[in-house]
Length: 211
Image (cartoon, rainbow, N blue to C red; front, side, top):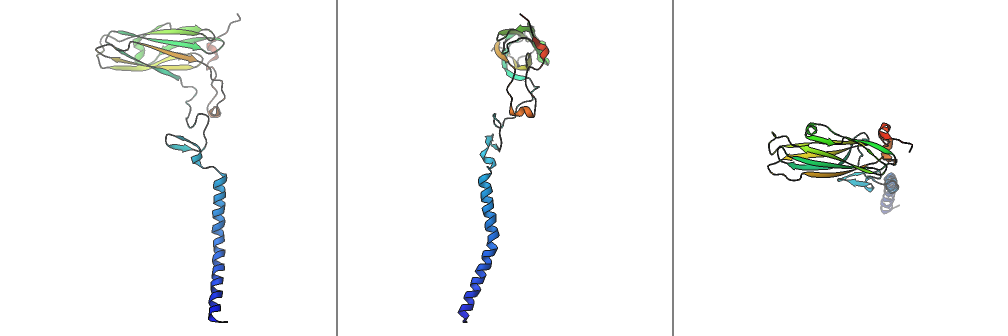
């Protein structure tokens, strides 16, 4: 056997050993590629404000508010002079087929500026009634001051209207109209498993008649 034959045999043996060491790495690469093809990555989900999530409900990545919180119904912005009055009209629609008692009230500092006419109404099935609220700025309030607070509408569920009053030397907007659809939420949502169902919040607010 010549020296050339010995060198060739050594090289062949070395190549065989290197091939054996490469097998585990090749298997790992093939397994990772198969997993990546069979399991979708997080990037295949929806995008919310730059972030991504792998699994989303019908509303995307939006987290619903707790069922006990009043539902926002809009904002009324008034600009009044000291001692002047403005008006907020709330048109409440009853989406149900049962008559319902609806109450309107306010909380916080803004409540002292308000006069309700009326505070309670019975709204018939699929009908609409209007609450008229007079907003009066006290005489001693100086221009430049601002007041805000929620006006609550309590029917089948609770709603709130944000009322913002700006006191100025000259009057601006003095009247607002806000529509409130008072409806039960009877749809079974994916997040009901984590929160709670949303039917009419208080059965005592229903007015049931036989005629």
